[in-house]
Length: 409
Ligand SMILES: Cc1cc2nc3c(=O)[nH]c(=O)nc-3n(C[C@H](O)[C@H](O)[C@H](O)COP(=O)(O)OP(=O)(O)OC[C@H]3O[C@@H](n4cnc5c(N)ncnc54)[C@H](O)[C@@H]3O)c2cc1C
Image 1 (cartoon, rainbow, N blue to C red):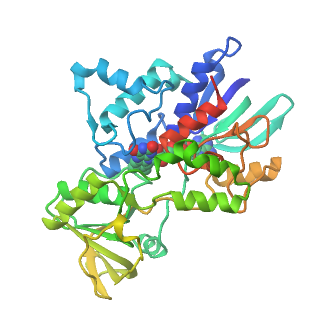
Image 2: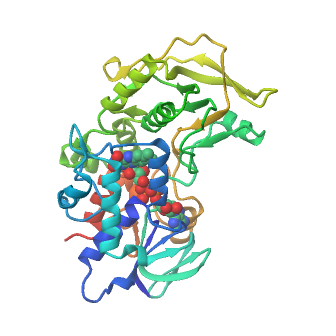
Image 3: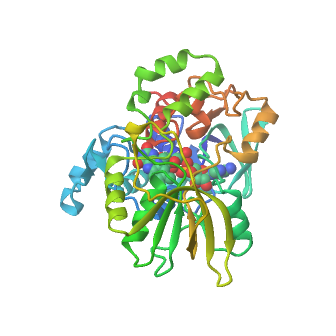
């Protein structure tokens, strides 16, 4: 029987595996910790999303990485100076994606985490007298304890009209779901979304094509360095969060703290340049109608939106959109994030029902301070732990905070 099975081999699963490996005692040889994931290799979903949006630098600083020691990425970067140079972007020393990715590979290789990847999708968890049995589409696995790190969601958010277009044969894709091509050659593309993924995707495409790239956002561009205030990493804001027992209030605190659909100033500057030079047409609008035209293109009909965003955090690059303004594109790319409901699908639904595990009114799990889900053998990390970790739970630093709680020392 395994000591630990980590369900999900993404950013959180890899960091947790690393921390559990680093803190394991003599009674836990390496091969008693395993990671379960359906992909051929670890971090596949993260790498796919990063490549799709074409991000050059992370939004988070260099101390947010997947190894245990906080200076590990910089120490690695210095060692490899001759090979690739140290690449940080100001402010806050944000690592290049290339450096971050090479460091991830180093962490995985040095702890032989790739050798402990079991392929499969967890479907249901059952109690054993001395542990848990995880049923997967590839056989059963017995473990003393599990950490569920299944991520922000299997289901990307699709507006209804986009689903209908796709069903009718339109070329509509979601940048969180599939590997997008490096370029769409001369096809004009319309990107939907107002956050960093949408803007970066539009910039990547505009750099590699002479065809038109349109960006449709439902709100003005919101500029924030990070996707929540760094005060949420420590006691500055978390003390009040943890003092709050009303789970509706906790949910509201998380939602208010997250700068959803925001971009940092450097990406905003790049967008301004691209819009001014005509490489990106940016519309602040919602889609009111859509159809496939006789020549197989997609026509979107737009209406202007007013968002009431706070003016100091907002930049408007967009041209005025008259109601019923129509634009045509060959391809629609959705960068509309994930559904906001509880992630984890049937696996989590069954766990709630089978073990009677507690959830808040918003549907999200209610873990204890050590991230056990009111069960001695079931731990949570990532989106599933956000009512305890707070607004940064889904980020890399959220994985680090979870690691310290699950495997202190
Ligand atoms: C483009 C992009 C840029 C980002 N940039 C930053 C940044 O700069 N800094 C930062 O801190 N954060 C950033 N984030 C946010 C955050 O780091 C990611 O969302 C992170 O990938 C979440 O990690 P995760 O492990 O929870 O989920 P995922 O990376 O989605 O991994 C979950 C894994 O679990 C697997 N899984 C799901 N269900 C099951 C099951 N039932 N059985 C087995 N396996 C299962 C999935 O297949 C997947 O491999 C970014 C996110 C995106 C999309």
